Length: 406
Image (tube, rainbow, N blue to C red; front, side):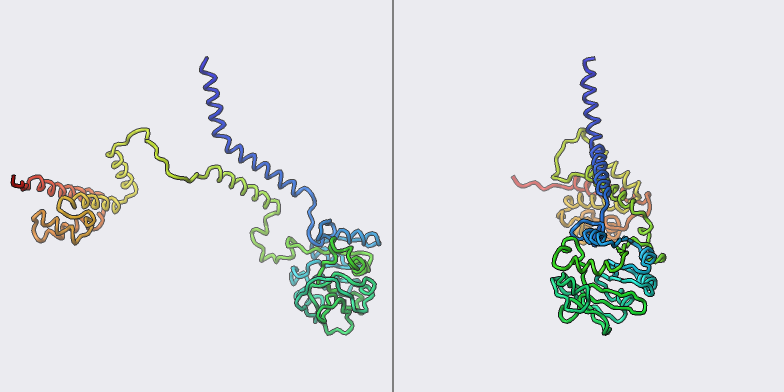
């Protein structure tokens, strides 16, 4: 009874020592899951999103439009944008250059004969080809406060505003060129008298951000450009839009739901923690006494069994021949460094045995020959090496020794 408590304490300590690693890894996994869930719990919106209050969001503009009776509808797919862009609407495309040719064509087809307005933010050559054929984009310039210097009513009422980015050139004489830089406009309005739908090209969207809306005439310009109709379609293109990738080009990762990516991240974190827990701690070698002494014969037998299991007759024969040459060298007067050189070792062995001249080939095959073809040949080789070594040792024992004169 007196020994039960120490045993219980030792067992508890042993269990804790063995299980604390997995418990810590499990705790880290739970914490990471909670953190990731917290990060995904709230709505996260990005750049130019009218629902975002970040510095690069556009919630302030959306509320300003709502105060003037303009409703804003956020869409994230080209199908939704094409369906919502009906008569009397303004279609704002936040990043037209990431759209595919098919998406651009479908949007232009849906809006080409519908009265309203299309606003493109920093459109490049691909989107210009679809919505503003004949317009060319010149290299961008930095954003700064610029004067309108044009007759466009919206720009004249707004006055100076933060414009820059891409510049546009068009041969259309009816177009409105505003906020110039280097002689080229950073705001270009292309009228369409037949369809009643004009197109506005903006070289930079920075004046729409929350952080810049209150500066100069940015709010007035944004309100007039986007609030000319009662309904605003705010299209935020997304790479997750099914129509952005052709079906024949979709890869395996595209078919994985977004939720599984977070699960894979958690599994990767758990695997990393397990690897850190179970990894070897490399450091200097520590000498440690073995609990038992292993006889050399057992070690030799163990090596032999390993060679046998691996059918490593080449390795075994090489070890036998090398050991024999090493032991024979001092007996026949050859330096240990030359023990494995046939041109030095073989003549010495031949001379020491006083063998016939034709025995040189046999000695070379015995000490430096090819690997044995089977186990029987390996055993025969070992016997021949023992016989050679025994012959030289026997001659050394019976050789007359010279004694110095007294």
